[in-house]
Image (tube, rainbow, N blue to C red; front, side, top):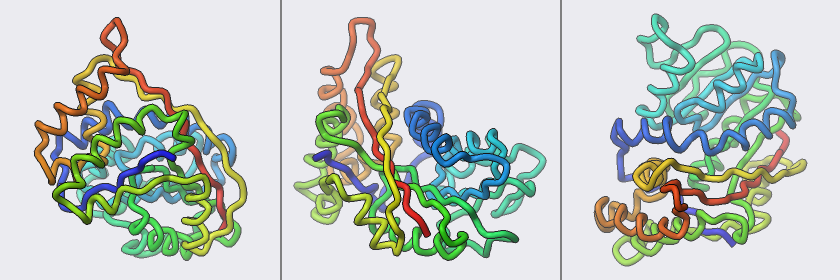
Length: 277
């Protein structure tokens, strides 16, 4: 089974880390986004709600296929980058921004003021680092905003033998555990049926799944460390020790994946579940 960390709520990202996510790490999940959009035939008739939309790359890809997209995220720094991608000037200026086909909302679906028209026809929660405790109420709230029978897509790590990054994530678990029992408890093993259990707990009906290869590739060691730290999966380790210590141990672990040309590459498989409202 593959270790998965929930992001630690006490550590706030800097603007630099949010930008590292947008410019380095988020693109690693593009194959996942493409597979989901293709399987569910995202297009002009799709009204998509993205939970934990981050800096908006998945929404941008759905929008390029013609979908009307709404994204929500509690991280204002990432959401600001999503606005730059999806709602460039002069639409900036209000907490909830919309151009008629694109809408970005701070927080989660629980805080959304409504669908402003027709209900959503698809919901996604594609950030595998989102804590289970956050996802269940968010999914329930999103289901209330969606049409009956609409697909809800959840994502998580695949089999441990096919996720090289699992070894790196164990560094975060080890560093967090001695001084932060709460953070250590947030480290869980991602089992074969975890996504199905999560969906049922949120009142959804599982209806198929898939696997996608998502290698993590970086041009150099510095980019690899910056990209991984930007995920938020190491927040608890940073809180329990310090960021320099976390970066040092990350570098040591990543040397196993450093190639002769200086690039760093870890092969991973992600799993996604399609559930129904």
